[in-house]
Image (cartoon, rainbow, N blue to C red; front, top):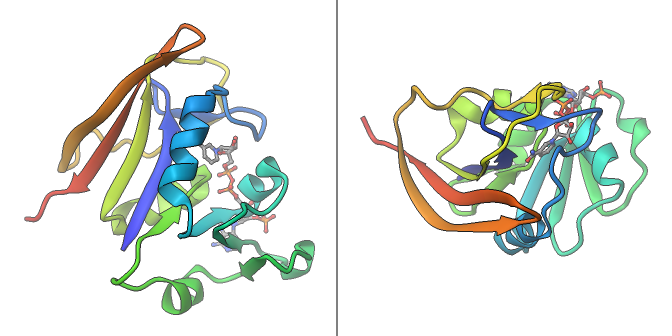
Length: 162
Ligand SMILES: NC(=O)c1ccc[n+]([C@@H]2O[C@H](COP(=O)([O-])OP(=O)(O)OC[C@H]3O[C@@H](n4cnc5c(N)ncnc54)[C@H](OP(=O)(O)O)[C@@H]3O)[C@@H](O)[C@H]2O)c1
């Protein structure tokens, strides 16, 4: 099962200068709770942005030049189809944790999206989440919260069956 997890601004922005736009410790905690003990799949830029592998998770990084990563806790792939065949199955939930290139690739394949909907926007953003708003998802609000004056909602989107 494929789940996307992302923090998304009002204009679908997710990043700037290879960093997150909003630093929200409550969102980080939520991200950890959701992904702990699962596979986390990311693009190379996101791996660089995080700065290391994530503990207590199986880290999988997509990168063209496999020699760029020398971390025994990371499994690397230069071919997404091969990674899907080897790593993804219907019995376990795998999390796509970014960035934009990974969200775009996996969006059509995703069963679920855990989106932190941030009630703010940033005109200087340079990376965006795919526009999911016209598609058929069943949304449920997990909870709403506020931190440093920024409101946000933890929402689960499940793909509607045709
Ligand atoms: N808001 C959020 O929840 C969230 C979450 C995660 C990330 N982000 C943000 O997203 C931004 C990064 O997104 P991004 O799209 O630039 O980067 P990304 O998806 O993390 O990584 C892109 C890189 O992955 C490798 N890659 C992608 N597709 C590949 C393929 N088919 N085969 C082989 N390698 C492939 C390439 O690396 P090489 O060319 O180096 O090989 C590519 O440059 C940052 O600003 C980050 O902070 C936001």
